[in-house]
Image (cartoon, rainbow, N blue to C red; front, side, top):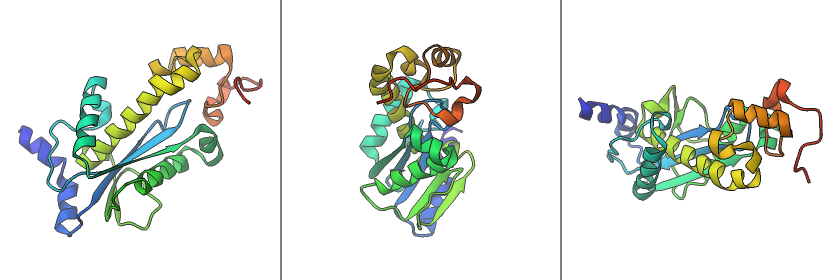
Length: 213
């Protein structure tokens, strides 16, 4: 039963291999629903036929397991690319377009050019053959691997650089999502330059942005 579950994660990859595609990139993004910070996307090309047991949708994994699989994926992958789109751009072009832009950047950052893309519920604006898969991170190993890389990359920024820059907001705790703590701190302190104004709605305080230069 366990073998079947693992093999199913390669179903879409196998269809690509049967059509003679060699370098298949899985693509996913994280941070779409956050009030704060970049949306981050990753693209991952794994060796054909490589089964990474336990690699699954990053949302199903604990922080510790995500970190473990992050290191495994980085070790095994033929290529990994990451794309970042910041809050100001998200506000300017909307989150859907920003997520697509981050995905495009992630593919363009790959050290090896892919010849097919498996994308989590989205289209990448590149002239490369591709397939959009609903809940792709739970049904394709390549997309699941990308979801882990994107999630760990963004979480490390939240707990490191971004939390250090704005320590009063608890970014390392809630990762920029709309928790009670986060909303309370925005109300108390005002939004930072890294908050997505278009996401704040009624929370938006009519005052100059703190930390604006």
